[in-house]
Image (cartoon, rainbow, N blue to C red; front, side):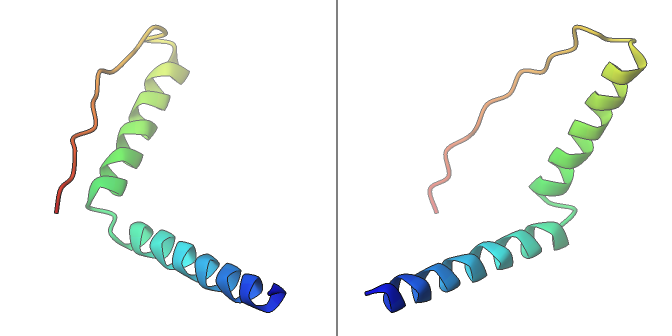
Length: 64
């Protein structure tokens, strides 16, 4: 039983690692845009120009 758990853990870690690597490679997609947005908002807050800055957002459902 422990061998099956260990095999599942290795497979899961590999899938997570592959997902992260793929997301980092696709910099022009959602991950890249979100990272850019966070960096720009952080810069505004750090400069003190917009100390009460907020954004409105929502998550759209995804049905392939």
